[in-house]
Image (tube, rainbow, N blue to C red):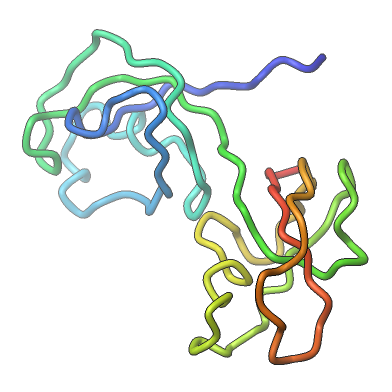
Length: 148
């Protein structure tokens, strides 16, 4: 069994709760003069993370109202719709983010937050068939993926 890789970072104290998931959006402009900005901005932009533990370390922060708290995070799985022929557990894939049908009910699953365009992902679980018919006529499966 492989060990879960975690990383220590800082998040707003209000968000610092075990199990909270977030998409890292990058460094804020107010971070420029902060002495601990490297500890806050050590994640990959666009990726989804889950807080696995909260530490006691606390810092004042220009961005977060109640300061920032140290947490351990891991990359969190992302639920997505992918072509059915790629929906094989442990297979490496690139998620096709080319769909522009924003009026489709499944759009947010075809272009899920937390997926970085062009990166490879590993299918960790096949959850089933798409609940809607794809307007492009593609056979889709609902899966959980993690960066790979």
